[in-house]
Image (cartoon, rainbow, N blue to C red; front, side, top):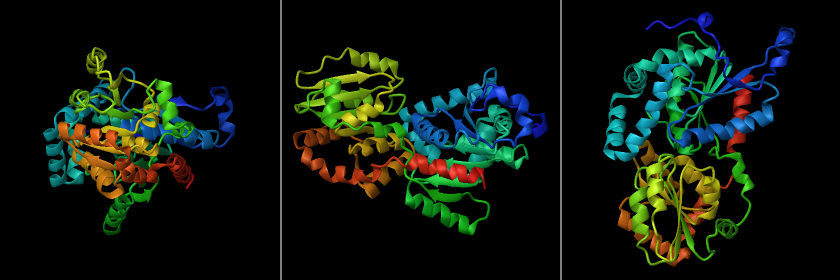
Length: 415
């Protein structure tokens, strides 16, 4: 497929940048500022939140020294192919969340055929319609560095660089404990929060040239999490939840799929005096159904649709119950809330689950709905039984990950 050369590509004028347009006429008198792109993409919020966390810190520390572009990579006005792929990404996440065997089969298949075949097939065949426009999109930024938290933006940036359409450095944060087979290895730096993942990638790099340098950073938790300084009981009081009620946050990602519905109905059968915060995300139909529930008098039931209060809910709750999502588990763990992981839709989510349940030991994996309810009842009746899991969450009580990532970006931008 023939792509444009770099000289033929027009930079997207709609991109959000911190450059002062009033100085455009005199810009030639001064050295041009380095340009960094934060390539956002919606495929569940687990990729957006680490990107947002890093971008905000980077702008605060270095925004006056370089040109910062925040771009929703697949959302471009008038570009049918890119907008189609953006919608396909969302559909894919919803599909896999509802159909666990599909995610498992996909993961097994990709591991059998290997990294190069997987990344090529996904982007040049499965999503062929958007390949050319997406590669040109990566090139159009005329960037010195492109930062990614999602495997497709990484791939398109690597393709653009290979084709000579950009000279940008390519830096990526993988929010999973290990780098999955769908992630391209042609970048400059691959950052992970799990030491085991860094060790695996570094070992591969010793035996094969051209792989990204692996570095370890703390998980990229949103900076604003540090603003939540009140006690759990104070946050319960803010929501009108009695302090003595054991509070459970139910969350199954941005689309409220997986086991959220069935778990809610099972927990409503419990005799223990609990409070349930059910975050339905963008699942409006489920949210409306929950609004019509009349809970028993000893249970405080609070359903929410898509909301910006997830950090407040995490600070309020004694326990998180939901699917294996890296950002969601990390943010709850920051507040000392262990997790019951109810579903692993893909091999990647299994890695995340195993990391928290077996290595960090801040979570339990329970997939049977009745067993989930039984565990919640046990913890509600005797909260002290949660202590070993609470102790294990301390590893996540830090907010310096985004700053360390921002410093790496700045260093790489200027190297």
